Image (cartoon, rainbow, N blue to C red):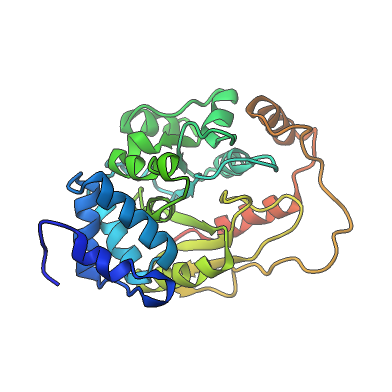
Length: 310
């Protein structure tokens, strides 16, 4: 398939339903996402793409091409070094459970690990990491220079996706029109936004683990793959999830963490509400030692430290 003035040939391939749709090859997927992020498709075509991919699901090759296309629009950031950073893509927020992504970021930063959290600043009906960081006195960085200054001061950095990659943010915003997530959410969670960083890649449904693990292998990624807590890249405070460590695309069974099995016999202390201010106050109490750190999050911190690229 050669590039055309319309993405209709691509839609014909991916839009034939769950059983009839076929994956695009890497060149086709790269051309398609380059057009989308470059604003060279109509609203009607964009809606067709979002719904078709939602039904079909992305292949590992498509994901690789989509991420490559997105990187062309990503804010250039300089790795803070000498210690590799950890990337925490935060795109779901809290609905029922407290969002402890900022707690994870602060715990890593306290151990000298540079951390970049990125995601939306607001999401109706959810409590974003941006809101919690702001309640903690760490509002989103305005640009790369401010991010570098925060890392130099030993603080984690939150960047809004609007700042990090505006065309990708516009693709994610399509959810508010269609009511469904689209490929942009997966691209954002995979984005290698900081050179040499360890990516925490989380999924919400087990079937996504298949394509994501294939992507990590094919791309030679340094990453930790996990099922997120309500889609956030932090361990469930109540039960240890599986943490699969990939080094240069190879599963590292020595440093991966098995999931907790069996019946829960004890529950950690959780905040009484999930709003940003209450969650921030709880995080401060954990950092000060007034409330015990949930064991699964402590184990995740150690896993990420052990998994940092050498």
